[in-house]
Length: 437
Image (cartoon, rainbow, N blue to C red):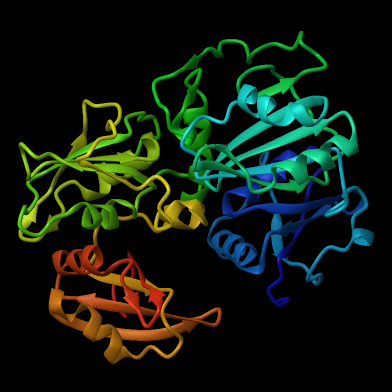
């Protein structure tokens, strides 16, 4: 097998397979920086943002046969460590191009075509916009009339926020030559052809403003489902049993909390396993109740599904969807929308795959390089009986597994010790689905 590379070699790419098909196969794992179609050989080369992202994609597809339009495709690391301009028959890589690939981080408001047009049109004539709601985040392709306009826009907007404190733009030059737009609606628009239909026949196109968080915002009841389909890639094409992918309620009511031991940060540590947290409110008139607003309806459905009935601090949690669409900001709310500790701002697909009910095993990462098993035991031994502990190295980084006597002890260790500092490193803790060490 070739040594790991950020370039992925794809074989058996039939003539019916498009660049967009390949983008959808890989972009849930991270940003795709270059794409080259080798039509004569029925092959393609995909360059991911870094080696770790490419490794995640190949590890996932070791267990799941990738299939596009009914055709199995086969992937491996390329012998190229990076695609140089000479490797790209159709692409430009870092060379200026009139099409921009835009990734939007920390999305707190819907990134519609209209919003993006307002942001990008001051820098030149925008011809086409296509948006994608993927588990890696919100992405868009912006096609200008001229290459110079795209260069000007990239220089002016790279790293800027669309809204104060959120919706940060990460802009690269695409290597596509022309965007294909089939419908004019909130998700795609051809400004040179206003006569395109708004949607496939039988599908509504009017947006529903029921959800104000970007990746859960509904556009004709579809972007919600498109989001679920994209996320399904993280689960091998099938959502976990009991998950519909159709929920649009973002706020969760948690009750039967241990009022002596719970606080907002501990709730954040637990619920952030299943998605990004916007804000949390412990109800002062019912201190054993709390509201947790998740990033979108899919993430809140995961949390309700996996945490219902979980034990924490001697209490069995009651976890249900709230009647409140969102938590209003106030003196008694804790804000997490811009927190760097939100797990799903990066490697979202990988985080979705790790979602599960609490287990008796926790996985610790982002550890100091000189960490020992004694250090790990010392960190978490206050929370229960440790049956086993193992420190190991993966991709040059130290990680650990700790097996407790039961799920409640592991859950307590996670909510109390996730995001704590250990020798200058911020420890990250998740549940592991391994049965034994």
